[in-house]
Length: 256
Image (cartoon, rainbow, N blue to C red; front, side, top):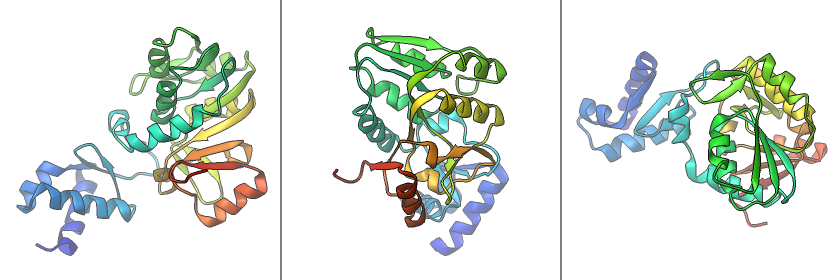
């Protein structure tokens, strides 16, 4: 069976089951694992599926990819984004890291920072930074979302309002063409909006896949962000808008 015939059937299986695996598809089509990986990469490039470890998942505008699957997505890009971001975080500063696998990468990259205070509503961030003895950690309270260790809801937003920090480092689930940062959970969106309001300066960390995704709830605009760290340039219209807003864009695939 040719690729042109396999791809629609792969999409049909993904729509039925929500996800597909490389091994199962190889058995189904009696082709090699490498052939299936090429098929999934083609569907991902078309924006129809999103690659995860061992397979792919159907993109959705209303529900996020599961946390364990997100942890395996674009790991190298997230690590590079995080490493570049922390170069702009001075020792002796206070910062907030929100929910997200990219902000967790930032936490890993902060291991050599000294005399910093990190506030977070992400239990995973707190557990990572425990290994840095020169980091004071404050976990803001709230409703624990067991799926990813995030703390959300009105208790969280009220707790964040008690602080004023030097810097917010946030991530989002999607970025649309007019520069809006988007997410899936309205409670998480409210928390992110509060984080931005309590920060003196804000950074966004998000890889290129966020340009291809859609989510229903608006956090805010890139106009509110001092620096956007990513692994590829945004679309030209958005790039021009960021210039007008004064939002600096740092791409890890380019030498500065």
